[in-house]
Amino acid sequence: MMQPIHLFNTLSRKKELFTPLHPPLVGMYVCGPTVYGDPHLGHARPAITYDVLVRLFRSLGYKVRYVRNITDVGHLENDADEGEDKVAKKARLEQLEPMEVVQHYTLRFHEAMRLLNTLPPNIEPRASGHIIEQIELVKEILASGYAYESGGSVYFDVEAYDKKYHYGQLSGRVIEDLQSNTRALDGQSQKRAPLDFALWKQASPEHIMRWPSPWGEGFPGWHLECSAMSAKYLGDDFDIHGGGLDLLFPHHECEWAQNTAARGRGGVGYWMHNNLITINGQKMGKSLGNFITLEELFTGAHKLLTQPFSPMAIRFFILQAHYRSTLDFSNDALIAAEKGLKRLQSAAKAIVEIPVHPAAVAAPELQKYKEEVFNALCDDLNTPIALAHLFEVVRWVNTAIDKKETIHPDDRAALDTLLTSIPAEILGLCMKEQDASDEEALNGLMEMILETRAQAKARKDYAASDAIRNRLAALRIKIKDTKEGVSWERG
Ligand code: ZN
Image 1 (cartoon, rainbow, N blue to C red):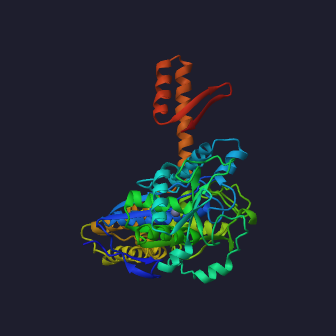
Image 2 (tube, protein in one colour; image 1 turned 180 degrees about the horizontal axis):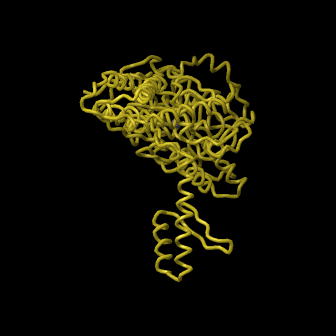
Image 3 (spheres, protein in one colour; image 1 turned 90 degrees about the horizontal axis):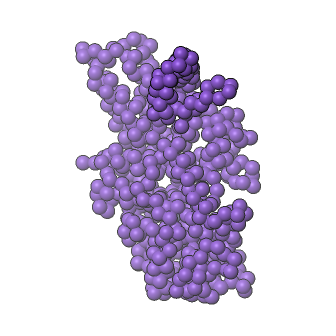
């Protein structure tokens, strides 16, 4: 029997017992990044949230098929039918092929995700690789009568859809409010009504990213890719669809409407949305000057930061808040997170200092802590409560060391699970402290090794000096002989 998991479902607006369609398989789709800029703090929260969910499922015996897309087509402002294509704009400004822009930022995103210790998705489909599937979906929606062609573009007919289904069902928006809050059409528009959104957009002559379609050359609307790719890899009905709260409307509402229009049902069992990160109480935005990329966080090169922060400190900071709460970022909050992580890591390292003896009295509370940690995680992924229980274990360890207590062998195993396996395997926190003393030791060792090599060279023992170089190369340490002496680097 697997431990039951409760998740908050945006669709029903309540916490529900999670029941997968095809246990033990969990089909999960998460909206991925748009790749026309450096990965930033806003990317870290959904990536880490759904990573912990995947790790939790797997630790409980589920098999997860985790699909996260790469948006590498179009992605216009707002409803995918206004403004300029951001990939194309970047390509034009930097005189690159659009796919060069996409490749560059996809690699940057992957590197940032690796540093944050997120597991890669099982499938990472790109919108540009699924144009055929998207065209097929447009045809289906046209055939059901919820879309219309206009001047080489195809639009979703929101009003017609709303008559049969309910547009706004997922986000809780009311169509009348949306209608009165949307600008009227300017007469130039090919749309029939302001709320209608593009499924397929005709490409203007200067538009670089374009594909042939039954309606002429063009490109898909932004919302379409996720409907098409989730169905392709997870089926028309799948378990979980996740993403940031900023995607709930219009992106996910439109996805839900597209699925329903094509197939008569939305097809997603549980919709999950992580809340957003604010910076010193403000929304993050380039215009506000508080936009922080992950690289700036890792190097400390930003005016809001006093120091670099390790990817693990950022991960810990994000896990300290429940994913459905807003999380306010500041330099001080990150310093506090860094300290918290160090306390956890130090306690994990200190476990071996507690002597073990078979005659020692076993501590039943350690088993209870383990249950509490899992209960918190299975209660809508409550990572702050899980961490609070782990810090009770930290105090337990510190007290045992202070009092020079002896523990039962079972307790040693329980402590290893609590402070090493659970943080590393489920929360994804690397538990080895990145100690300044490690770096010092390495520098000292390298100095010693290079001295030995210099001595070998001095006595013309080239076999020995080459052997040292080769052994180091195998450890990915490169040494360079220069006029000034010998230098070395890793990597
Ligand atoms: Zn999406």
